[in-house]
Length: 108
Image 1 (cartoon, rainbow, N blue to C red):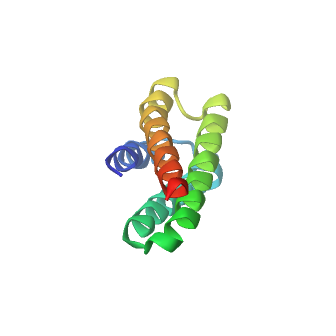
Image 2 (image 1 turned 90 degrees about the horizontal axis):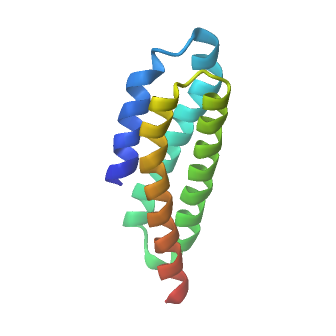
């Protein structure tokens, strides 16, 4: 949870630096995906075991979408490479954690 929170703070501080069109299109989409992913991770942490697998799966799907749209913004030259790397590295670690959580839930 700490990694994605750190990534969101970096993203949120950079959001105002985007040009207007990028901020109100992909920027809003990415911001929404960040908050939804964080919500699903929080929800999974407090959910009963029988519901966790589905919620963790949703969090993982949201995270994958988030990474895709961040990459798209970087490829469109709207997000500098340095900021993209600062944001995407903690997201990759969050993805590994979610994957481990999913595997653990499938075992039991």
